[in-house]
Image (cartoon, rainbow, N blue to C red):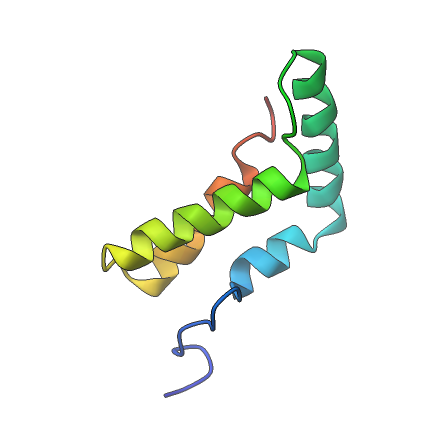
Amino acid sequence: MSVAERRPQDGELRLLDQVAGNEVIQTYIALADQFTGQLGFTEHGFRHANLVGHIAYNILSRLGFEERLAELASVAGYLHDVGT
């Protein structure tokens, strides 16, 4: 099995790690946290983004969806508050 085909180990999501590590994305998450805070919401920063991203991955993975789709769901979950 090639590196690209192997399933990530627990806690390792390659695509999500790349997105989360992007400096521009980090700025957007921080700004989304500030904005949602102004609206009265609590904690919509990095912890929340990571939780939602990992939960989205786990749901699709456990339902038997393809790895790539589960990873894309993790990114969608991570970014879901950007642009709020």
